[in-house]
Amino acid sequence: MLKKSAIIIRKRKKKKSKNYLLIFMNIILLVTLLLFFWNREFFSRVYFIKKNTEEILYLNEEFLIFSDGEKKYNYNLKNMKYREVDLNLKNRKIINVFSDNNILFQEGNLLINTLGDIQKIENLDRVIIVGDFIIIKSNKNYGVFDNRLNIIIPVEYKSILKGDKYFLVKDINNKIGYLDLKGKTVVPFEYDIGNIDKNGEMVVGKNNKVGVINGENKKIIDLEYENLIYLSPNSIIKEGNNFYFYSPNAPKRKLNISWAGLYNGETLFYSRDSKFGLMDKNGNELTKNIYEELEQNNIGTIITKKDGKYGLLNQQGKEVVQNIYNYIIPIKKYFFIAELGEENNAFIINFLGKKLFFEDRYDSYYELNKDFIVVSDKEKRKIINRNGRFLDDVEEILAHNEEWFIYKNKFGTSYIHLKS
Image 1 (cartoon, one colour):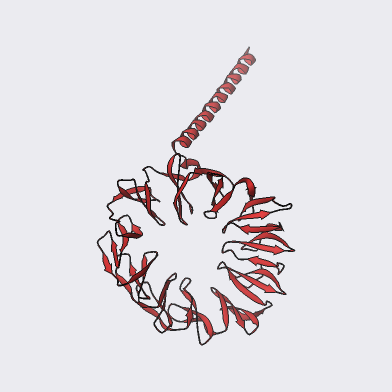
Image 2: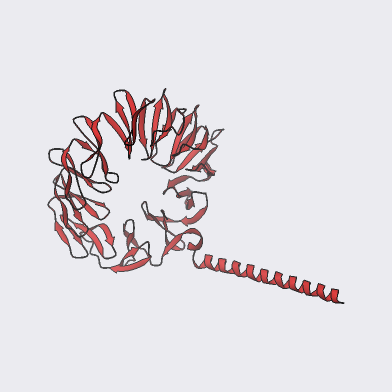
């Protein structure tokens, strides 16, 4: 009798446990469905603009200005907050949005912002925004203002470029110098050529010799070389027909190469015996010189050709895709069309070498960045991520840049942060 009771109790406990598990699983399923239908952001990083977007007026890295047909709004795409703005755009052009309440306009020769600042610039030809700086061109000369339209660099130079820590400036005598971000000259105008600084260091040249200096005009590498490729703190130096690896902490050593070229800031292409290979910034060979071609595409993936076939390398010299394709054609920078074997047997692959789908599945492709591509099939467009996963339908593309993609579909106006 006791044994029978114990068996019944165990069965009841087991049944009760199963019921709890079933209830728990149902709750999880219900919450998931509610989240999905209530907000698709839960799965796909698709965000929504909950107002009518009759007209897109401006887009930058953080802000979107649009009209709903009656009112105009400055929308912060990152924190998803609206600010109604009273903009008279009859004779004005929006140049930039620096903050929620600082919008910059051009009206003829005037620069005006919504904070009440104004600058009149005779023969204003061009306005270039770099971060919080405004580089302007007038009468073939350049100058710089801050985002409150205060003068940082007078409009009297032949060219101005902004680097990491300094402005590269060319004076009326075509000499190169460097100014700090407050407009103070830190490197005098004595160089014939120069590059924008990378973290405060720059390659400069005069008297047909080049070297490297810092923002205090101190020489990191003496100006005594015909040519050099600088990968801080090292360099590849050319003297005559010979190439040398230079490091401040080691003796100069000769490299057995016939050519070198900078790739993507951290890696070098090199050539020897009419074949190409990859080298790191310390002068070490990442690959042997076994490739007939290396195609620089300004990304971390390199198209290679070996024995007449194409493949992909990453920046560390690792083979991402073997040299098995008849061709690999970049769509832009991060997605490729690659044909394998028979004719028309082509795939769309990503920069990691993953096959996404057959090339003829869609009529056209438009790459947004390394993570997203827009594909079209007749009149239908879709956003696909780099793993081939569908994110959303696209009926109309409203605007996009390197940060954001804004579009319409049956749900209204949506957007994706391309760099999130």
